[in-house]
Length: 261
Image (cartoon, one colour):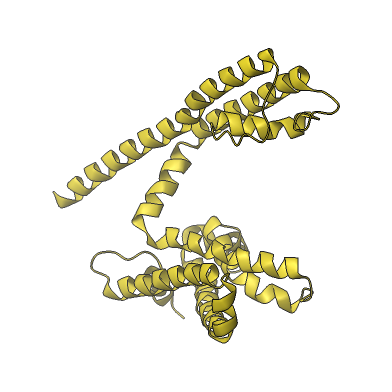
Protein backbone atom coordinates (compact mmCIF):
# COMPACT_ATOMS: atom_id res chain seq x y z
CA UNK A 1 0.00 0.00 0.00
CA UNK A 2 1.29 3.48 -0.87
CA UNK A 3 2.71 5.92 1.66
CA UNK A 4 -0.01 8.41 0.76
CA UNK A 5 -2.70 5.92 1.80
CA UNK A 6 -0.90 5.12 5.04
CA UNK A 7 -0.50 8.81 5.77
CA UNK A 8 -4.20 9.43 5.13
CA UNK A 9 -5.19 6.55 7.44
CA UNK A 10 -2.86 7.78 10.17
CA UNK A 11 -4.23 11.30 9.81
CA UNK A 12 -7.76 9.95 10.22
CA UNK A 13 -6.77 8.10 13.40
CA UNK A 14 -5.09 11.13 14.93
CA UNK A 15 -6.91 14.06 16.50
CA UNK A 16 -9.13 15.71 13.92
CA UNK A 17 -8.62 19.08 12.32
CA UNK A 18 -11.57 21.42 11.80
CA UNK A 19 -12.20 20.45 8.17
CA UNK A 20 -11.65 16.70 8.55
CA UNK A 21 -15.16 15.25 9.01
CA UNK A 22 -14.11 11.58 8.86
CA UNK A 23 -11.43 12.04 11.49
CA UNK A 24 -13.87 13.96 13.69
CA UNK A 25 -16.35 11.08 13.54
CA UNK A 26 -13.63 8.58 14.40
CA UNK A 27 -12.52 10.73 17.35
CA UNK A 28 -16.10 10.89 18.59
CA UNK A 29 -16.49 7.11 18.27
CA UNK A 30 -13.29 6.31 20.17
CA UNK A 31 -13.92 8.97 22.83
CA UNK A 32 -17.44 7.66 23.43
CA UNK A 33 -16.17 4.07 23.57
CA UNK A 34 -13.45 5.00 26.09
CA UNK A 35 -15.92 6.82 28.35
CA UNK A 36 -18.38 3.91 28.17
CA UNK A 37 -15.57 1.52 29.10
CA UNK A 38 -14.66 3.57 32.16
CA UNK A 39 -18.34 3.70 33.14
CA UNK A 40 -18.61 -0.08 32.68
CA UNK A 41 -15.59 -0.73 34.91
CA UNK A 42 -17.18 1.39 37.64
CA UNK A 43 -20.75 0.11 37.31
CA UNK A 44 -19.90 -3.59 37.20
CA UNK A 45 -18.41 -3.36 40.70
CA UNK A 46 -22.02 -3.21 41.92
CA UNK A 47 -22.71 -6.91 42.48
CA UNK A 48 -26.44 -6.76 41.74
CA UNK A 49 -25.85 -5.06 38.38
CA UNK A 50 -22.90 -7.26 37.47
CA UNK A 51 -24.79 -10.48 38.26
CA UNK A 52 -27.79 -9.42 36.19
CA UNK A 53 -25.95 -8.01 33.17
CA UNK A 54 -22.62 -9.87 33.26
CA UNK A 55 -23.13 -11.25 29.75
CA UNK A 56 -23.73 -7.77 28.34
CA UNK A 57 -20.62 -6.47 30.10
CA UNK A 58 -18.63 -9.32 28.55
CA UNK A 59 -19.93 -8.67 25.03
CA UNK A 60 -19.21 -4.96 25.37
CA UNK A 61 -15.69 -5.75 26.58
CA UNK A 62 -15.09 -8.04 23.59
CA UNK A 63 -16.39 -5.39 21.18
CA UNK A 64 -14.21 -2.69 22.77
CA UNK A 65 -11.09 -4.84 22.68
CA UNK A 66 -11.67 -5.70 19.02
CA UNK A 67 -11.95 -1.99 18.13
CA UNK A 68 -8.93 -0.99 20.22
CA UNK A 69 -6.88 -3.92 18.89
CA UNK A 70 -7.63 -3.03 15.28
CA UNK A 71 -6.69 0.58 16.00
CA UNK A 72 -3.40 -0.52 17.61
CA UNK A 73 -2.48 -2.82 14.70
CA UNK A 74 -3.31 -0.15 12.10
CA UNK A 75 -1.22 2.45 13.93
CA UNK A 76 1.67 -0.02 14.18
CA UNK A 77 1.36 -0.80 10.48
CA UNK A 78 1.08 2.83 9.29
CA UNK A 79 3.64 4.43 11.63
CA UNK A 80 6.47 3.91 9.12
CA UNK A 81 5.29 6.94 7.11
CA UNK A 82 6.58 9.10 9.97
CA UNK A 83 10.24 10.02 9.64
CA UNK A 84 11.31 8.81 13.08
CA UNK A 85 9.66 5.39 12.51
CA UNK A 86 10.51 4.95 8.82
CA UNK A 87 12.48 1.69 9.20
CA UNK A 88 10.03 -1.20 8.52
CA UNK A 89 11.24 -3.25 11.52
CA UNK A 90 13.16 -1.09 13.98
CA UNK A 91 10.84 1.84 13.31
CA UNK A 92 7.85 -0.20 14.44
CA UNK A 93 9.74 -1.49 17.48
CA UNK A 94 10.62 2.10 18.37
CA UNK A 95 6.97 3.10 17.96
CA UNK A 96 5.87 0.25 20.25
CA UNK A 97 7.90 1.83 23.05
CA UNK A 98 6.45 5.31 22.56
CA UNK A 99 4.16 6.60 25.32
CA UNK A 100 1.01 6.59 23.18
CA UNK A 101 1.65 3.06 21.87
CA UNK A 102 2.28 1.73 25.38
CA UNK A 103 -1.04 3.20 26.53
CA UNK A 104 -2.79 1.63 23.52
CA UNK A 105 -1.23 -1.75 24.35
CA UNK A 106 -2.10 -1.53 28.04
CA UNK A 107 -5.69 -0.74 27.05
CA UNK A 108 -6.10 -4.17 25.43
CA UNK A 109 -3.60 -6.29 27.39
CA UNK A 110 -5.92 -7.02 30.38
CA UNK A 111 -8.28 -8.86 28.02
CA UNK A 112 -5.61 -11.17 26.57
CA UNK A 113 -3.58 -11.90 29.72
CA UNK A 114 -6.15 -14.23 31.35
CA UNK A 115 -5.62 -16.64 28.44
CA UNK A 116 -2.04 -17.22 29.65
CA UNK A 117 -2.49 -16.60 33.39
CA UNK A 118 -4.22 -18.59 36.12
CA UNK A 119 -7.95 -17.78 36.05
CA UNK A 120 -8.50 -19.14 39.55
CA UNK A 121 -6.47 -16.41 41.26
CA UNK A 122 -9.08 -13.82 42.25
CA UNK A 123 -6.48 -11.14 42.92
CA UNK A 124 -5.12 -11.34 39.38
CA UNK A 125 -8.62 -11.12 37.95
CA UNK A 126 -9.38 -8.02 40.04
CA UNK A 127 -6.10 -6.38 39.05
CA UNK A 128 -6.77 -7.04 35.37
CA UNK A 129 -10.26 -5.58 35.68
CA UNK A 130 -8.84 -2.49 37.35
CA UNK A 131 -6.14 -2.22 34.67
CA UNK A 132 -8.85 -1.53 32.10
CA UNK A 133 -9.06 1.98 33.55
CA UNK A 134 -5.82 2.65 31.66
CA UNK A 135 -8.09 3.19 28.65
CA UNK A 136 -9.02 6.61 29.99
CA UNK A 137 -5.47 7.77 29.15
CA UNK A 138 -6.25 7.15 25.49
CA UNK A 139 -8.40 10.28 25.68
CA UNK A 140 -5.19 12.31 25.69
CA UNK A 141 -4.80 11.65 21.97
CA UNK A 142 -8.28 12.94 21.12
CA UNK A 143 -8.83 15.73 23.67
CA UNK A 144 -7.24 19.16 23.28
CA UNK A 145 -7.72 19.83 26.99
CA UNK A 146 -5.82 16.67 28.00
CA UNK A 147 -3.15 17.43 25.41
CA UNK A 148 -2.76 20.86 26.99
CA UNK A 149 -2.27 19.28 30.42
CA UNK A 150 0.37 16.84 29.13
CA UNK A 151 2.20 19.65 27.29
CA UNK A 152 2.30 21.79 30.43
CA UNK A 153 3.61 18.92 32.58
CA UNK A 154 6.22 18.01 29.94
CA UNK A 155 7.50 21.57 29.59
CA UNK A 156 7.51 22.21 33.33
CA UNK A 157 8.82 18.79 34.33
CA UNK A 158 12.16 20.09 35.68
CA UNK A 159 10.47 22.55 38.05
CA UNK A 160 7.94 19.89 39.08
CA UNK A 161 10.73 17.39 39.77
CA UNK A 162 12.49 19.96 41.97
CA UNK A 163 9.30 20.64 43.97
CA UNK A 164 8.61 16.90 44.29
CA UNK A 165 12.19 16.36 45.49
CA UNK A 166 11.70 19.04 48.15
CA UNK A 167 8.52 17.29 49.31
CA UNK A 168 10.30 13.93 49.57
CA UNK A 169 13.22 15.49 51.48
CA UNK A 170 10.81 17.20 53.87
CA UNK A 171 8.86 13.95 54.38
CA UNK A 172 12.02 11.99 55.21
CA UNK A 173 13.39 14.74 57.46
CA UNK A 174 10.10 15.23 59.36
CA UNK A 175 9.46 11.50 59.75
CA UNK A 176 12.99 10.85 61.00
CA UNK A 177 12.81 13.65 63.59
CA UNK A 178 9.36 12.59 64.76
CA UNK A 179 10.48 8.97 65.08
CA UNK A 180 13.34 9.88 67.42
CA UNK A 181 11.12 12.25 69.41
CA UNK A 182 8.06 10.00 69.81
CA UNK A 183 9.46 6.47 69.69
CA UNK A 184 8.46 4.22 72.57
CA UNK A 185 8.37 0.41 72.43
CA UNK A 186 4.64 0.26 73.20
CA UNK A 187 3.50 3.32 71.19
CA UNK A 188 1.88 2.43 67.83
CA UNK A 189 2.52 4.54 64.76
CA UNK A 190 6.12 5.50 65.52
CA UNK A 191 7.80 2.09 65.68
CA UNK A 192 10.04 2.81 62.68
CA UNK A 193 10.83 5.64 60.27
CA UNK A 194 8.85 4.04 57.39
CA UNK A 195 5.86 3.63 59.72
CA UNK A 196 6.22 7.25 60.88
CA UNK A 197 6.09 8.35 57.25
CA UNK A 198 2.33 7.67 57.32
CA UNK A 199 2.07 10.43 59.92
CA UNK A 200 4.38 12.57 57.77
CA UNK A 201 2.20 12.22 54.67
CA UNK A 202 -1.01 12.94 56.62
CA UNK A 203 0.57 16.02 58.21
CA UNK A 204 2.26 17.46 55.11
CA UNK A 205 -0.95 17.12 53.11
CA UNK A 206 -2.87 18.63 56.09
CA UNK A 207 -5.31 15.70 55.87
CA UNK A 208 -4.82 14.85 59.52
CA UNK A 209 -6.50 11.44 59.79
CA UNK A 210 -5.89 11.44 63.54
CA UNK A 211 -5.06 7.75 63.89
CA UNK A 212 -1.38 8.58 64.56
CA UNK A 213 -0.39 11.75 66.39
CA UNK A 214 2.41 12.98 68.69
CA UNK A 215 1.83 13.20 72.45
CA UNK A 216 5.00 14.93 73.65
CA UNK A 217 5.30 18.72 73.69
CA UNK A 218 8.28 18.67 71.31
CA UNK A 219 6.47 16.28 68.98
CA UNK A 220 3.39 18.51 68.87
CA UNK A 221 5.58 21.55 68.15
CA UNK A 222 7.31 19.72 65.30
CA UNK A 223 3.94 18.50 63.97
CA UNK A 224 2.56 22.05 63.90
CA UNK A 225 5.64 23.35 62.07
CA UNK A 226 5.51 20.54 59.50
CA UNK A 227 1.80 21.13 58.87
CA UNK A 228 2.44 24.84 58.20
CA UNK A 229 5.37 24.10 55.89
CA UNK A 230 3.31 21.46 54.10
CA UNK A 231 0.79 24.07 52.98
CA UNK A 232 3.54 26.08 51.27
CA UNK A 233 5.31 23.07 49.80
CA UNK A 234 2.13 21.68 48.19
CA UNK A 235 1.25 25.13 46.86
CA UNK A 236 4.58 25.17 44.98
CA UNK A 237 3.76 22.55 42.29
CA UNK A 238 0.25 24.00 41.97
CA UNK A 239 1.76 27.40 41.21
CA UNK A 240 4.18 25.89 38.69
CA UNK A 241 1.35 24.13 36.83
CA UNK A 242 -0.82 27.29 36.91
CA UNK A 243 2.03 29.37 35.45
CA UNK A 244 2.57 26.68 32.82
CA UNK A 245 -1.10 26.79 31.83
CA UNK A 246 -1.02 30.56 31.48
CA UNK A 247 2.13 30.46 29.35
CA UNK A 248 0.88 27.63 27.13
CA UNK A 249 -2.53 29.27 26.56
CA UNK A 250 -0.82 32.56 25.68
CA UNK A 251 1.43 30.81 23.16
CA UNK A 252 -1.51 28.97 21.58
CA UNK A 253 -3.54 32.17 21.30
CA UNK A 254 -0.62 33.89 19.57
CA UNK A 255 -0.25 30.94 17.21
CA UNK A 256 -3.96 30.97 16.35
CA UNK A 257 -3.91 34.72 15.72
CA UNK A 258 -0.89 34.29 13.45
CA UNK A 259 -2.71 31.61 11.43
CA UNK A 260 -5.83 33.80 11.11
CA UNK A 261 -3.76 36.66 9.75
